[in-house]
Image (tube, rainbow, N blue to C red; front, side):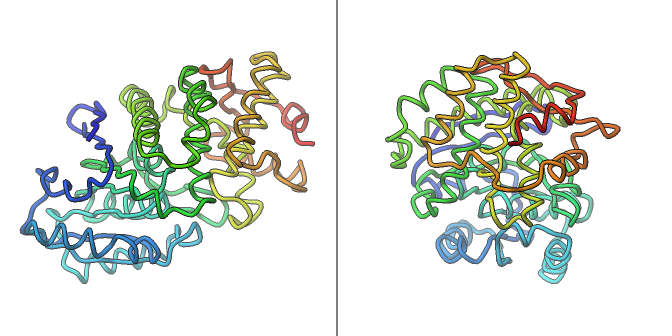
Length: 357
């Protein structure tokens, strides 16, 4: 297995990346108490594929783990499901020495991570991400939370896991649409931070689309390295970490305005990246050729590049409600080339509408 270290002082941890490595989980759990009951949180689909296997691995190693299975999907990432999860934690007998294991994609990780962060003011938390998006992004860095009717991730906490185990063989059963969702976040890392990695994504597109494990391990490792470097310098998004939100201010608006039903998170972010690339081109921070490469790569990986017929005024209103806006002023990440980016404040409505056509 490959290991990526997230350096956060006393909250430091490792991300382990490999193929068919679930059986290695028990030997990594040096901080998990075998005497306290722990909870494995998953969704119905993922649990049907891997839940019993993970439970057997943990039980065979002497850990007391019970399962709590949610329906799944973005519609479950809310306060109602969170309340149900707290009930499971109480009735199963979890205590301050217990651990929450998350087995699933970003919804499971965000929801159960927030439950772990807030139950008894914080208990153990281990991430086993099963989607590409979760392996390269949402399982790393400690962002947890749930959605409210008025916006995405408006309630949550920064709460770091004890470790992350990313087994790329779990991606073989991922639906094509969900796999592409993760590729949007992969592309994001190339745009904001690493032009050489962006080149790699262009050159090896067919291998990556075919889910070649050698290439998957490389892209998961590189994305985690970039995120670990950023998070270690800015855990709570006071500056540098905001770069990870490239395309998200637009994307969250597209998701909310379509009731989280028309686009997956990655699809919305992909369209958002197209918008910011075009905006960066208009503002002169990126050349037309560079913006074109971003759009082409997104299209070549089978991701959407347009949001449909959503009214521009509605999009702007939603963007003003985004938690990254300050005093009603919209700020967002703009690329300054392939492999570099910056947070730009004071983006005007007119500038935003200029790319919403």
